[in-house]
Image (cartoon, rainbow, N blue to C red; front, side, top):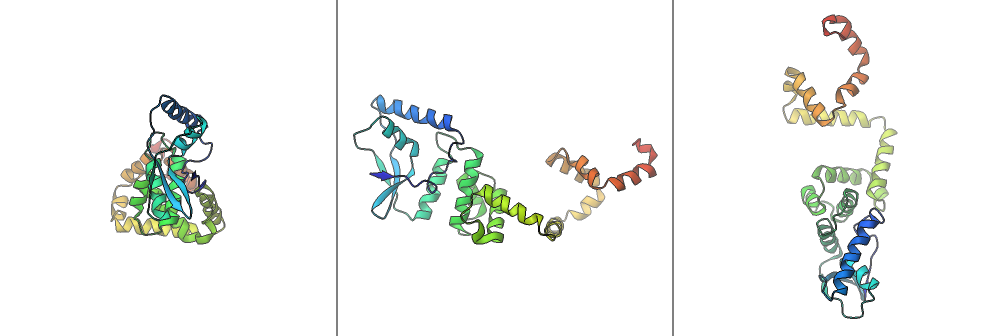
Length: 233
């Protein structure tokens, strides 16, 4: 008998797309009812029991059709962490596409499980998300430690954002980080020489940037408008 370890190897967020999940299970049931076989379910031994690493929808299909025969399985003999990695990799690229939310939560679990033993790019590739998002996850885990260990990524990110609101120094830290990054890339001189290009680049990132910038510097904008009537502002 094989068992399900909810919350560990099940990488999809519960009920995020129940219709797609149900359709996938029905398709698998039809395959079984035609007498055709399904790919082996990947399981791993934990103590005396075997738990599903990949193949949760196939397990559901077998149960729904009342399957009485043997169920083909493939046994994974690696560590629990290695099994988790395989589970995320297979689910992020299998027949029923995972939503971005599920892939992000899977990546968060890998970040906590793997620490720095795998690069941010490696984790991003396994979970099929951006490397930058993994870097952010590592930063949150580094700053909050055990406080966020049992939280989902959504919960951990919410806590991180809330803490920042009560930290009067976080903006100064972020400003210094940006300045340091610009200096490392030798962009400070180019920004001074070509502010129009820099502004256009930021607008490509966020089309609302010009309006947000003016709102932050509205007094300066008024002075510029008064000193330069030819601008027609």
